[in-house]
Structures are given as structure tokens and as C-alpha cells.
Length: 277
Image (cartoon, rainbow, N blue to C red; front, side, top):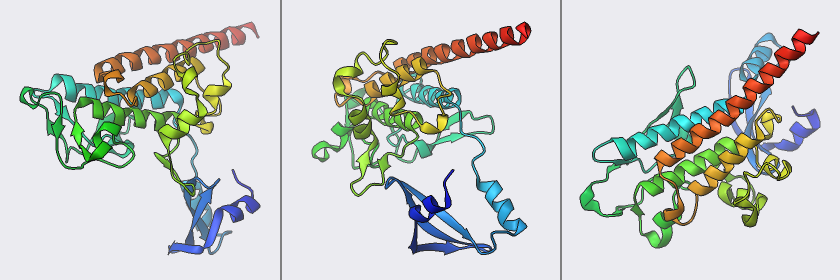
């Protein structure tokens, strides 16, 4: 929630975006990072204005367990493309907006417009023209405009999506100088601590510095630690150090077990307390 003075600070009244039947829309920016659209209702006390506000207010944020399941579903989809299809399929445009959710929040990979089959005759890489989305490209793909890709370029893109899931941040933060999400995470988690990030003895503050604050600490810290480790492995600058999607699915399933086990313990503790009252 924002105070009225904070909303005034966020809103740029000189950047008019559009007008609806009951409001004007202006450009806004929160903390010089997150772009927002600010609606100014022409009759703020009217029933219509109140109904529109209620309809657009986020009453709930997807839980950590829900986010983790979306990531696992996406990983399983990519695993199928890479390891179960013959010949294997490289998606080449893995990004958050190409992962769709059904009414049960089951994730599906979409948009195969630039996907390519990867046959045995292709060797270790295929070279084509530039495809995919800026911010999700593996460094070896765009380096010197080589445009070489294989299944590990999809793994890198998946790692970026996983960082979005964990942090709740866009790929590029909207500052005066756009900061890539991987660079931002690297700045929060020093490289020398990455290998030991799953150590339960490490302070929780390091993880909390990158976790989406909207989760309000309603997450399993150990589960998030493992997810961060998994994401960092996927976005390694060395493609040979990235896991396969099969390995990523295996890691994701083990993280889910950790998360569900804590929920079971919490529920058991809650039942015990209720029985004791």
C-alpha cells in the first residue's frame, strides 16, 4: 500500500498514457525501477470507480509453493523437448511470458515460432540468425554475434525465468541504467558465497535480500536457498557447467519435497496446538 504523498511522488503527470470512460492513466515509476500505470479516477467517490479499484487490486500473490510448481512444470516441458522428442527440440525463446498457466495454475510452454530441431548431424551447436528475447539470451549465443545454440542456451533462459520467479523482478529493472536481473542477483550474493548458499547455517538475510518481498516471509528458506542455487547453476557463463533440463527437473522435485515437508510439519504443529487448547 502507498500513501497519497507516495503516489504523487511515483506519478509523472507529464506523461499521459490514455483515458478510459471513468479515468485518466499516467506513467509512474516505483523506486526508479518498477514501471506502473497510475489511474486517476474522474469521480473517485463513484460506485463505478470503487468497483474498478477492487477489480484491479491484487488480493493475493502466488505463494512460494505455487511459484515453485510453475517453475517445475516449465522445467518438465523443456525436459520433454530436449530429451523425449526425436529429434530434440530447442525452444530458443524461453521467457516468462511464454509460460502460460491454466485455471489450475498448471504451466505450459508456448510459442514455438523460432524453435528448431536438433539432429545428430548438427554436432554440438547450430548457427542461425538472431532469435529469442533480449535479456534471456545465453552469453555464448550473442557473444561476437555467433548465434550458436544448443539445449544449454534454453537452460540459461530457464535460469533467468527462475530468477524472476524467486525475486519478482523483471529481467531489466527500470533505472537510469537498466540492470539485468542476473547482475542484480550477483551484486546481492557475492560469488564466494554461492557454492555454500544451501548451507542452513548461513544467515537468512542474504536470501531475503533477493526474495520477492511480497511473499512476506511466507516461504521455506531452505527451499528458496536450493532454488537460488539451481538458478545460478542454470545461468552459469560456462555452458558446460549448466545442468541439463532433466537434472533441473530432478533438483526442482527435491526442492518441492523440502517445501512440502515443512508445510506438513507446520500443519502438524498447528493441529497439536489446537488440540492442546
